[in-house]
Length: 330
Ligand code: DP6
View 1 (cartoon, rainbow, N blue to C red):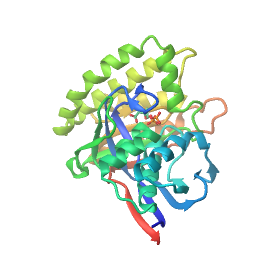
View 2: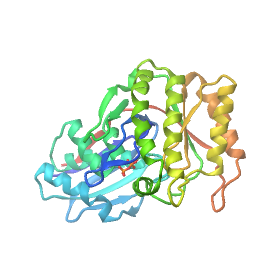
View 3: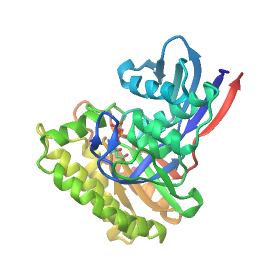
């Protein structure tokens, strides 16, 4: 049986970052990651059976080779010969460091399996999505998730209701696609950064404490550990040859603004992925005040060469759900 299926999935924001692979052929992560699935931003993917595999993202056909391992694994898993046409839209800038590949492959995996008339448990969908992008393994679950180092699938640690007051403010400081994909940059870090080994060694040591901070809903502790994780990841990137720097002037402005907000007693804890955007962890009661301060700071920041002025778009997100799948046409 085959059908048209629509899936909406939410990006997975890592508090403790995945950066590096223990097995690049199977796309297994070298570091454990701890993340929150974000409501307020999403990818929507419509899938139907077709004669060739084709993925169109925000109107642009995607390179076949990026998706081939995923589609091959999908067919092996479902024991089918079906090919798929997928049309995908992000509610946020694509490939700019907003974890679009996490929600993208999660939506694709969930939609393709249903479009083929199959049914897989969330763990199995997670393992399938991981072949596309390891962060996508986490987006198959709502709330707070863990993808252990070397694991084939993620799992949920706490449901989205665990910490209803948590907010993530996403400051979009540049909407251009990143110059280097996470995958390429991870490989460059492994190959050429003398800090890569130190990064791997330190990544695991943050995890146990971060899980405990999450369990206690301790923003200050969780925020401090999230800062260590992203700072060490970017330090390893910066030490690559050639040096890899995703940040824009407005990124630095916002890192400093968060420090200033904390000095004034507000709980604003930033984290940064493979792009210039800054995501700020805070609590609902302070979210409006912090968002206004970030907006003002980013609005005043000088744009980098060739960049549009940042404009200060702040999205407010909260812990979100697992992907939702709807069969549109039988
Ligand atoms: C910085 O999951 O996009 O967002 O597995 O190669 O597709 P691939 O990488 P991807 O990397 C995400 C890196 C990160 C940190 C994180 O989400 O844990």
